[in-house]
Length: 248
Ligand SMILES: C[S@@+](CC[C@H](N)C(=O)[O-])C[C@H]1O[C@@H](n2cnc3c(N)ncnc32)[C@H](O)[C@@H]1O
Image (cartoon, rainbow, N blue to C red; front, side, top):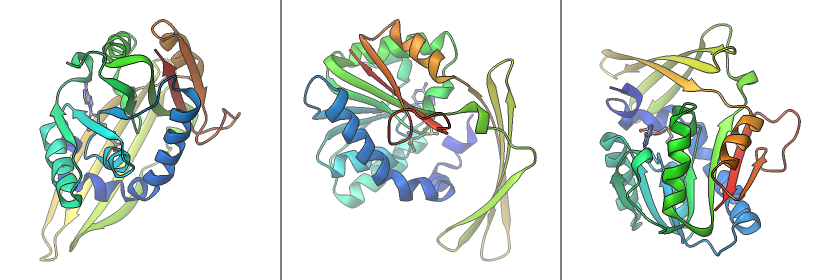
């Protein structure tokens, strides 16, 4: 069980408050990439590993016809509730990104916020195949992932957030194993209730590290055009986040 995406799904947006705040800027850049790189007009988008729908809802607000797909029903339940509250018409489906059931349905497929790091050397090839099947010719696949160099931390990183009258204290340990290209990630989430009671959850995760060159070489086996961007612009030497953009 993945606690962050199951028992903690209701707290995901509070834990990532800063990401919620910057999503509009992120989607500005994604729209720029649609304009620049897609070889067809982008109207219908599949947001893979959509989670609680932070970017999915923003795409729908801008008029795209969007379907959100995620492995975890608990995340989708939050996404459906949020979309309903805003009156947004978004379909959310529970599925594994490796087994997308759509054939040439979308002008664009997106996969945000490092979700692509869940796939290792062999499953990433399956992912590219699955994505390629779902995209129409000339359509794009866009996924962002971080630079490994900035991924680790010497000691714990602690911060706090609020969800209504509950207080969250979050402690992260992030260890990079350069030789194995893995990022080990441990997170303690403490939920402090107004009556003084505390609930605590430990999240343990392992993510796959890719350099921009590796990602490009892997994607080139599957897509006609592949480009790596930096965060909001062309690639620069010290970018902390990369954007993979491929065309079918
Ligand atoms: C870091 S969250 C990102 C959520 C969302 N994209 C965002 O930008 O906030 C990673 C998401 O990947 C989903 N996920 C992990 N493996 C998956 C898979 N094989 N298929 C579909 N979703 C997956 C998790 O359930 C989780 O919601």
